[in-house]
Amino acid sequence: MTSSVDTQSPLVRANLGFRFLLEAALFACIVLASVRNYDGATAWIASTVGVVLTAAIWGVFAVPDDPSRSGKTVVATPGRVRLLIEFALFGAVTAWLVTAESYIAAVLLGGGAVIHYALWPARIRWLLAH
Image 1 (cartoon, one colour):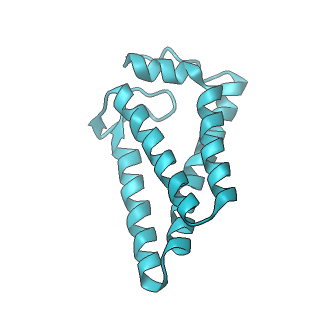
Image 2: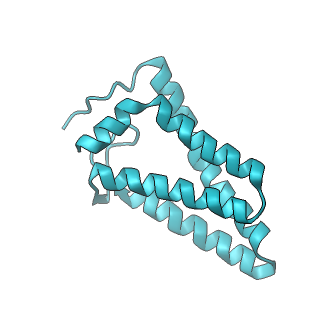
């Protein structure tokens, strides 16, 4: 199956780079929220479990031939489910940052996710169709 989403345009390539940074920020924000919400060893356990669990979900559940990824997947996932997973992870970590009173990080992560999806409606349409 070939992708019908153009990944060669400068805007899409820039958004792919932005997506990479956003994914890295997602993991960093998990650590930040853990450290701000918990003390001592609990903070580091929450950080480790949060990052490992999120990375596993992010990497394992994918739509085959997703143009924003390698196209490979461990568990073939319908596009609607993948989109829901992405929204849920960004939303949950953003909300967790708010509970930690890390408002700037919450606005940056949540706002960054909104900007990413707003700049790439073709991927959203592709996900909804697959």
